[in-house]
Image (cartoon, rainbow, N blue to C red; front, side, top):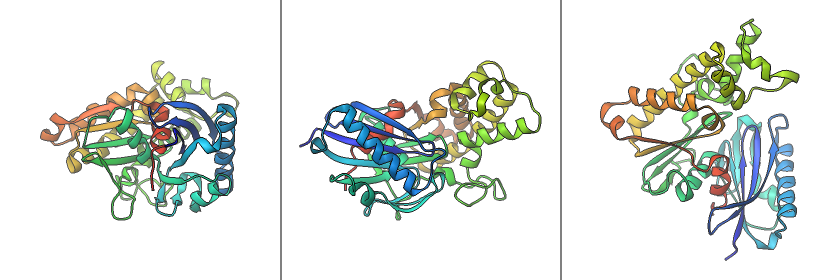
Length: 316
């Protein structure tokens, strides 16, 4: 059995490509590429191929030592055929990732959802190890989740289970990248917070976050953290609003699925502990009393590597 696999976490703002030791789950080497401005199928495939080539060259590992390439994509996927069916945040539809990668690298390629692979990573080596009933929720460009029952990922009838970001929280609400209105991720994602802050700034609200946005820099999770630490009213208000919506969505999950553990991850959770703590407190308060007393919360233990580690263990 070959020792190494390549795991790829394809998100709305970046693609992370890593060489993973399958015996230990250790990330040996990794390469990161930004995807925020270069979306669309051609650019996405180009970035993944270039990243794999860089990874192999820098790690001094040959393709013959690689057992598989696993890709977790932020969107709906056809696992059997390796097709990314729809990924609004990447502007990709009906993209055959398996076929495109195999044009460059002759190894088995497997495709999964980005939060599904993060859940696999956390189950095998992270915060969910030893648990059987878990929901993993990751907050970033969007809000995604993966459901684990009896230690196995629940994919649903069409393989699209776990789309918590597209629970409708306002029937006539904000437009979502998926084309619907009022989806949770239009209120609770880092992108949603960013839009609320930018909208307020355009209307003349003052915020210390402007100190970090020189030269046209986009708002990041670390900027949000630093602004809250400085007591910024606008940023705190926008984060509080997102926490209200996310905690409501999580309370619904607690009531409906009744998991042992909820793992929260993603850049916003990692960087902004204020947000994480507020979401937990409010989710428990909004849940039914019995499941609320038993539910546990943990941060994803593998951080940015949850996805790439899990992707390395994808199988056909």
